[in-house]
Image (cartoon, rainbow, N blue to C red; front, side, top):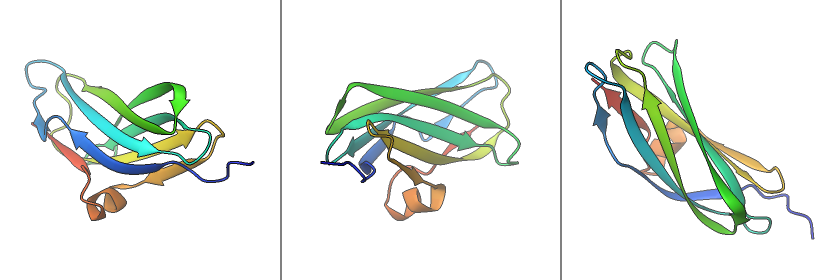
Length: 120
C-alpha cells in the first residue's frame, strides 16, 4: 500500500498568547495534535513571521518513531529585544513517507487554531 496522503492537524495549543523579550529571550511552546493515515506523523515545523516580515523564528518537533496519532511540542525562542507586535504562525507537518501539509496563518485562524503570538 502506498502512502500519498499528508498528515492532518486536528488541534493545537499555544501555552502563551503573548511573550516579552525586553529583559530576556522569550519562549513559547506550541503543541500540535496530528494524525496520518498510514506511515505516521514524522515531524512538524512551526514558523513565526515578524510584523515587518523581515524576521522569522522557526522550531521543529520530531516524532520518534513516527506515529499514526501524535502530539508534538514545538518550543520556540525569540531573542531578547525581538521586534514587538503580532507574529504570524505557519505550520508544516510531514509524515514518514515525505508527504507534507502546509497550514498558513489564514488556514489556522479559519480552523480556530493558534495563528499568531504577540511579542512585547
